Amino acid sequence: MKRNEKGFTLIELLVVIGLVPLIASGAAMGIFQVVKGNERSNNHMVAVRQVQNAGYWLSHDAQMTQGISTDDDTGTAETEVLTLTWVGWERQDEQSNQCFDFYEERYTYDSNELWRHQKITTDKYNSNGQFIETTESQSLTRVADNITGIIIPPLVGNKLNATITASVCEATEERTYEIMPRTSWA
Image: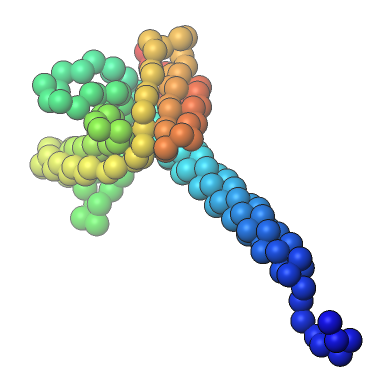
């Protein structure tokens, strides 16, 4: 070989050709691990958030309740989880009529979704206490997705216990809520 020639020898090229795939496969495996780890973390956070949503609404309504029922008498494919009822504060409308609101919150579980059926019945009375009318409004809200289990055992003392489980792919989150109402369930 001439001294002034520049380039790589055959051995140097063979070493580089052998090292490049090793380095590339190591980098690809590292990237794959980061992506999979991110996906698992995201799935777990979605499961946590769904359990928190379900727990928030159950706790919110159970703290207001004056009556509770866990009977499933809907006659539909969905499973009734819980029915909560309470009377709202006395209030006046814009015509100075006295209004009494009666709330019924019914939770149902169907195809991994937790639904909240709200029914508000309002009785109106004039300033002399004479009945005017009854109005009713209803709404349906999906509270949480990916719910794989809800367990609400019979009341223990004055506490409602609810265990809620959510699963997203392999990620699972389960929490137990112990809810003490503001009023008595007696």
